[in-house]
Image (cartoon, rainbow, N blue to C red; front, side, top):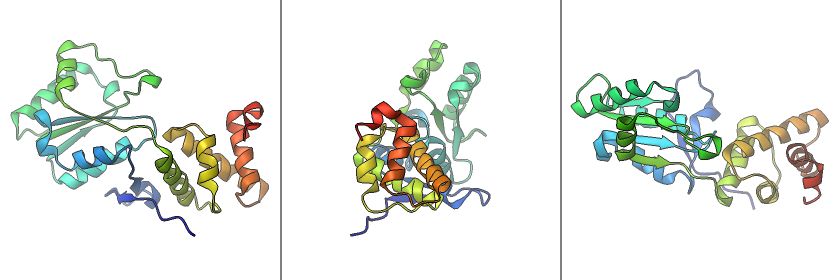
Length: 219
């Protein structure tokens, strides 16, 4: 029995962007975010803050939401944690005026993952405004989402994975977006180096390359 295709949404990106990069997997970790991004008019203060782990599709979702809103009705600020806090404070305030060139709503995208340092705002006035905005956080992938990610990354690479690949790999790899992407890339690399199909021996070699020989004994 073949595995059903993972649930995806198309992203209205430029023609220069590859087709595989124009899709994002939908699952329990981000479905609530996708739902909220479709209704910026309902955001408190017309501002939402989108955070999540590395490689979780934050920027892609932001661009999808901006395309969905159309025109200048949604402004997106990406990598907000690197922006001057006073400038971000003024941008937040400008949205409250309505009809400004910044747009009627503002989506702030930040790498606020605590494991990677988080986003620590020093300016008290900005911290209070960010705290009062709608908080949208992409969670860690669960088993089903991780399996869909494995198949989606493999499909994007043109890598054929036989039946049972995700069921074998999901319990044996780190449960994060970045780790899953790296695992599939490693499987693809080893398969090409060996000029062999990506079967279990390749999966095991990829897991050993990423986790070490000691850990591989558990596989």
